[in-house]
Image (cartoon, rainbow, N blue to C red; front, side):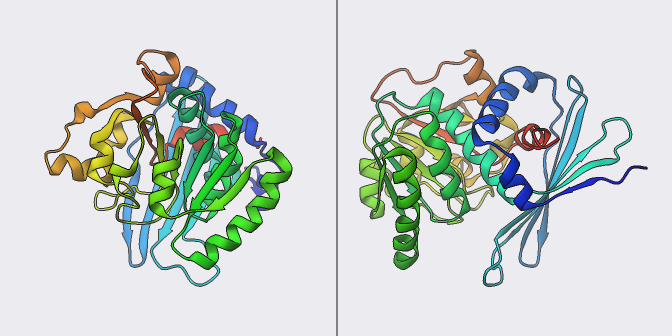
Length: 313
């Protein structure tokens, strides 16, 4: 039995190129998705959160792996709320090949998937990117979204004004150097009203803004909520959207963003018009006008983790 290679967070940051991750995930949803087996992920309630197990098997590429995740409601000071490990396995023997510290891997693949959805659903002219959140996912979304659209301004909003100001100052230095983009803090109402592409990257269990404030033509990437009782947007936002895409239809049983409006009778399952495979392959249409509001809802798909982990081999 060979000893698996341990891959640290520093290794992942050093070796994972964001552009390659984006390309690999887009290719996987276009070409590999029909052949993969993605079981419903396991949710195990913990005293302080949730444990998730996310396996994926692709016989066409002889690839097998699983991610193990703990999402904590109240992490200790200085510790992350999301802690992930990925195990890339030999598809014949199930012996581990790589054991990967997967926090940054998760953040990067999530933002890359949002960027892919933005590529197919957002208007071409999108000068303003809005980000709710000031944590790890917010950072990678700021890193990845400009690879598919040209933004002149980034608005951000967090729960803690002091943390938001520090985050803006830190990211402004990085983004200015890289892309000549200005980043500023904003109120929830301003962020909702002025963003052309809006990303919710929070652990907030209740809506972040009033859906009436969204202007026509906005594209939203909803990233944070993944449980039936939590949602980052209100029913008005979901009702106003005319084109909702999900990673896979199997994820519809998880997020309150959809389940709560369905329970209220505001929408039905027909409100979701495509999954990511159908969107990328053109089996379902993307944006049809500059006026419609589009949504991509992400809860995390094990295929994204598998193809990102493969890049570390």
